[in-house]
Length: 423
Ligand SMILES: [Zn+2]
Image 1 (tube, rainbow, N blue to C red):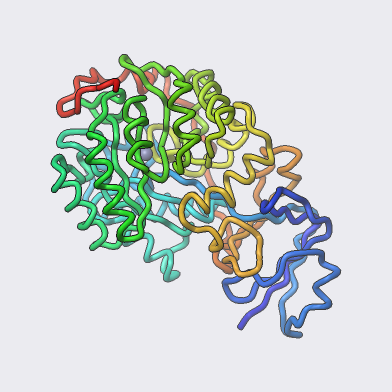
Image 2: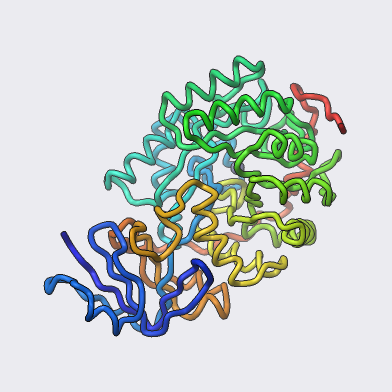
């Protein structure tokens, strides 16, 4: 047994409320947190005399960050989908190892991968868990279920009929994925797919949810189009990815009735706000976040990192955007830690500084409760009790010149969709 006593000028807890403990301490034995409180009180604990003491000084020690929607197998460059389709599975695994290190190097200690090919994500998850490679605790989903020729079909998750979707969930379970991802609507990254079209009837989504829940897995539904969001909520999915209220033509139009339905349901919203939200019409993100918050929907942090021009190491730069879009700093700090953990089925495992949780800790300079941007000023990382020294990362690259926005890039002639119905 190895015990380490970390002390810091500020320890930030996020449950039940966001609070700063001045001159705080976190005691870790092997991979688990044993004590969180004032440094003065550590003396009263039955801590081994051999315990290591690490004084981090003028930093804020807090729970590691959670990105609820990433794609390790997308490289975050100008055309990640083309690279994925050109690469073999072993090449993809090499890329995913890099992506995982990038996430951990910016303090993301838990990430959910929502789309990879050939169960490469399961391989990477296990390699991280057994210490072969460094990365965040990874939740995997394998290939997203999609209609034939539908959004991200090239990942291998095509299924159309009720029997086919049921079988795909069982196949994923057999291959030990953690969550199930379904493309409830088309998307922006697939030629021939239109983000406003639903891809599945509500009945098919229900079968996916029932079958997944039966084997203890949560369901994440990619949904841009408003009708696809409505169906996903009706089917009882656990997280709504993007939730962007896209209407025919690709623009967004916030729908109050659907937002109310989300708030009344058990579904969480994972809005995939990333550093590029500032570049493309930030107004529509602002309307969405403010509207969902006003309706009472539960929001967790996610980026879709890996997609076009969105590097994995840009996660901390996404957090100030939630504040700009109407959430309080304390709300964002809870969304990216304890609430994200709860939404992902990891309550009591990670996402908070509490005795019994795994030791996923970061220390940042400054105080994130005063300024959320401080989360980008990383000083120290501990993942599952082990220190990780962050890699030196490149700057976040500017957008390529003359870039066509994603919603204007394809012709959006959807091949296989369920007709939009407005019942
Ligand atoms: Zn995605």
